[in-house]
Length: 405
Image (cartoon, rainbow, N blue to C red; front, side, top):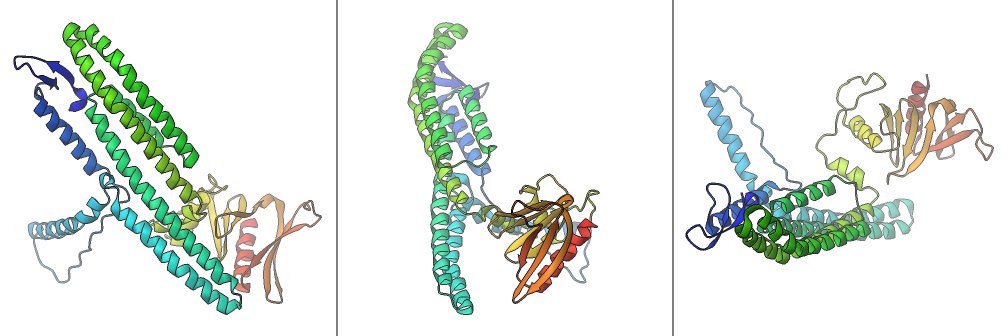
């Protein structure tokens, strides 16, 4: 309601009100409209909220339609009420404390578990370096989750403050322009600290310019439309914008900088994208081959197909994969891609370059040799893929042979 209003002088009472259609004609009505707008915005913006509903199981149950509807309605209403604390804790207006606690919990979990994993592996391999690696991973994870979680929570608080202040400017066009800019920002690819700082600096300058130019432009536009009365309204809106818009620009600058910090911290974790997939309840079903055939749902195939879509094979049809413990082999209809555990590309080969595939077994050493049609620059005519055991080597050889045939 507020964004549709203009300052109104007089109309009998002699006070400055705001004309917002046929209902909001007084300052009190405007305040109520602003509070409603702020409250609705606060309740609608959640981040990472999840609803958990308990299932219903009935045995030997006899009831009519009305009774069953009442029973199910009461059950799910109670479940919804039990989810209210989690929903409130996920509101961006409060800084998403649930998400912050989740990030801190993940960091503490890695801080404890990674050294323990390294200690166990050190005992198995008789190599103390695994302990130090585990301690470094755990400490790094705790630092990333803590810094990223705090920055993300603080960014939500400052963004909420800026949105609410934009409502207080009583400038509909300014608020609409700002909303469009924020939507474009949310659709961009991941930024970093430098990008966030640059964006924030531009918004700070833009806020100051909006406030200063509004002092001149608002009275002129008001006078052109409604004469002296419009001039008075324009002066009020211009002075209000001069006070509020630079503050909004500064708040947006802080928000973008904090978002840049969050994204930079996430970018330091090479497994961030894969971890995001693992937190998803169920990845999208995999469609196989050129014909995009539908088979029974398999979680491992669905996860592999999703990873493939985000790799250099993105856009190609998924065919198969082999989990090699430390690595994963992804097979599209045209190429083989092997990724390491941290998402780095180990090998990429088009099938048209491969002649045959063989399994090789040595002393505690298993591999798959992929023979090429043309030798490499070093003179060898094959790529060797190391495998942790003979079973995985045979499986990889079988899958590649099936693809080539």
